[in-house]
Image (cartoon, rainbow, N blue to C red):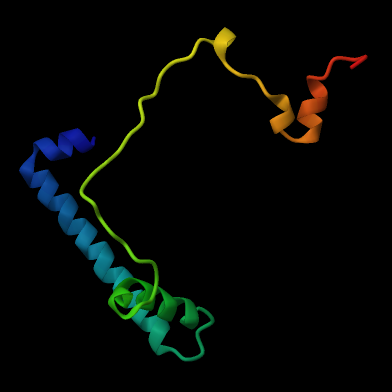
Length: 102
């Protein structure tokens, strides 16, 4: 469906407009919560805003973009060549694969 929307500029514009409306509605809800001192989620709303909009003041996580993506090659390993280490699992799983008499 994304490809279909991306191929049609009118649909893409409509989807973007709907996203913007959702963001506007979300901002209104957060503002209402933040402006109500008795709302039980007021602190969460304030924290959300500080972490997102207050990053330049030291709030939230620092986000850095390197404009680079590193991916490791996903190489298929045949099942008979894979390492099998049930001891790395929890004790119950390890016990399932332990031979009696060991």
